[in-house]
Length: 246
Image (cartoon, rainbow, N blue to C red; front, side, top):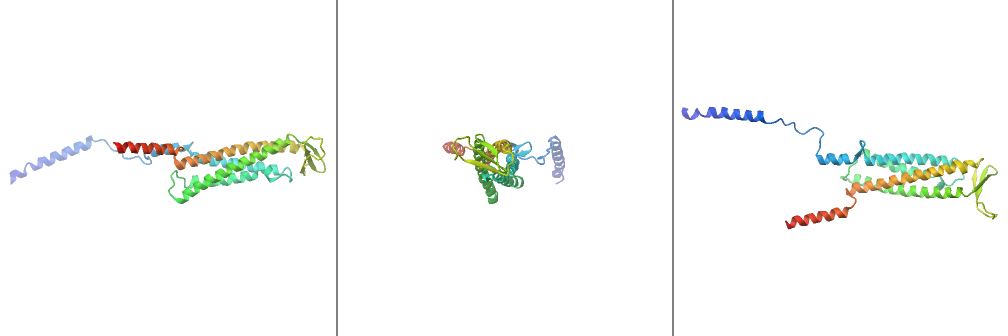
């Protein structure tokens, strides 16, 4: 019995010594770094950011800035003469674009996700897409109205009479149409200042419409990940067919 127990001690000591040597030779495992995600997730997050901000967030900020500018210029145009029509002072277009921008900022700053995981998130992204399309339509209408009025002012001959500016086409016909701008003592405010405001409105609304169009494209792309969905589906079906053959 004593002879059987003697070799067990050296075996245990040798096993412990081998385990200590293996632990000393093994490199230290620092473990996963805090805050570091998978490489794919980090790449997707970097692709969605620009200068530290998400690209759709920059579009919403541009919509807000342009909407405020269109609204301010529209109210300045309305202060020139009370007889101006609402279509000629497109502050309404700026207000609509500002509402779209506020919804985009709320969605992108509070609970933005590329893949919809809740019905509320999907509804907000769909509403932002539809309102951006409405903003695009409104901006196009504002550009059309401003361009029409601008083309008329380039052809009118204006004169002051009874605290109003009377403008009409240079025609020999006595029944030619006359445009009356009330509460205007100097026609240069119509042919000069108001005409400049119309040109500014055309530029601002054109840029604002392009930003709304780009916002619609980004929302569509983030909904389907790629724009050409059919090509991707065909490639997936082809790869599945090859796997089944193998």
